[in-house]
Structures are given as C-alpha cells and as structure tokens.
Length: 112
Length: 114
Image (cartoon, rainbow over all chains, first blue to last red; front, side):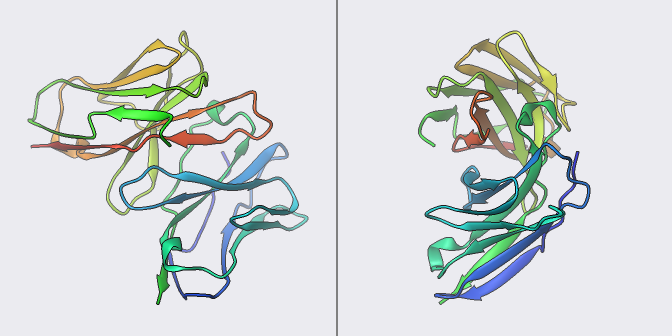
C-alpha cells in the first residue's frame, strides 16, 4: 500500500490560490491519486482524481509530475467555505482490495 | 451524500452494551465500507464488503462485526462497547465498474460510550 505524506495544516487568505502537495514515493504502476475534502462532522467528499499529468474540473486542478512520486492539489481563488481537511489517497482502481487509510490529511484554514 | 444514509446519527451507550449502526444506500453499488474517525485523526477502515457474500477485515476490526444483509444494507455491530470506541463512524459505498472508482460517504454516526 502506497503511503502518503501531506502537510498537517495550511493557512491561506481568501482569494488566493492554494496548493497542497502530497508525497507518495512508492506509488505503484496501476495506482490512481485521489483527493477528498471533509467538512466538520461530515463524510469526506470526492474532489478530483488523476493518474498522470494534469486533471482539472470545476472545483480544482491536480498536477502530477512524470515520476508520479508526488501530486499537488490546486484550489483557485479560495473562499471561507473551502476551510476543510483535504486527504490524498493513492491506490489502484480496485480500492476495496487494499486496507485503505485516509491518514490525517491537511487541515486548510481560509482567513478572511 | 443523500444516497447513503446512516442510523442513528447520534448514540450514547454504556460500556458492555451491544449496539448496531446501520447503513443504507440507494446508489446500487456493490461495495460498502465502515470507517471510524477519532478527533483530529483521519479515517481508519474497519470492515469492507465487495458484495453480499463477501466480508473483509480492515485496519481495525477488533471489537467490531458486520453484516451485509443485502446489496443496499451494511450494518456495523459493537458486541460489547468500550469507551475507546467513542468516535465518529462513517459508511461509504463505491462502484468497482466505474472507470475511476471513488467512494461516497454517509453523514456519519457519532457514538459516545460511557
């Protein structure tokens, strides 16, 4: 199981672009990289998933370098409502085959 | 996600009591999961099920049991609750046939064991 390392916490001001980097040095060939967002007392919510290069959706962008040993979640022009914990997960398309763990995530606080 | 529901949403029980947390889903997914989350920590996998005939232990299954009554229902039981099982419990589902499998979480059950 590929282990991930993320910063424990980050602060940013409203309107800024926020980049959260996740390290996953032992990522396997068939592993995808997935990011979830969790608000207090709610279940995590899928944000974005990618395999290589760049993926963009209406919420975020995900940058994955060629060696895939890290990935960066980019949130454009954050607002107070983006305050949450962000989890980086690495696993195959068959998540259920692994003892999946979300880790502690990155607690992002947006400052007015 | 409203398609994944959990009951009860909050529960207080005493040490030694048996309790059951229930999860139902209308997403038609075969895979279901139970996680626990402790304050300030990430989610840890307790059990998961690929289909109604499949049950697998997760990272922290000791003290817990599960039952997959149907594709839509996955229950978590604490046979004899203890205080360190006080936590927030989440149920999740996923569709293995999706090109990119992601998990959909319920609203959580907050459990307090006295």
